[in-house]
Image (cartoon, rainbow, N blue to C red; front, side):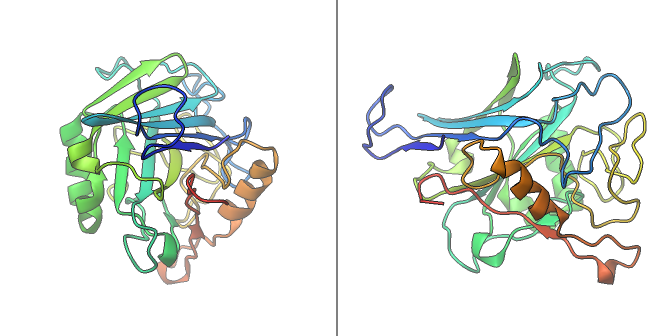
Length: 269
């Protein structure tokens, strides 16, 4: 289901005026355009990149993002953050105005947004230190750095990552906001033009996803939200269709990137 309780709406719990959004994603679509496979190393447990639920809640001075996957959150590399494997980018359209916001994604993700669904804020949930996330974005996507928001804390709980973002950095969530959640994997030693995410290649390897291309242009995401984000089985085929509309090529001028949609929980989809 997709629920919005905002600006005095009928919130069943919590204070009057609280904003809450729940978006669901079907199980078993952690294969990008339908062809992607996990790395072979056992730390990449099946379901670790299978997005199942996203909760967003206004919590006074903060906004809480809860992103759930179809496997326990683990920390095989012993990172101080308490998790190691996932890396998530949450793109937010705060005005839903044509021609407003960014249409490119952070370096290395290789998908686009349409010009009428550009984003103003991007919350990156990464196990890397805050300073490193900011440094990577400033160095590799300087034109997008003004939209970056990094959580002050991210806490793993069972199969959920709970990220706390300062409202001063994000703004107060509104019923008209749109969201897209791109699921990737943390990479501490990324390519020179990739921000902390793991590449998809033609064939998978110990620490590489497979089923894509060794050239650039294939979507570097394992799972996304698909409107209306109710978790229906039809959203699997829709995801595959969306992410299959790309052309990878060794010639950058010939690349065609897949265009991903926003989900607007406060509007009919």
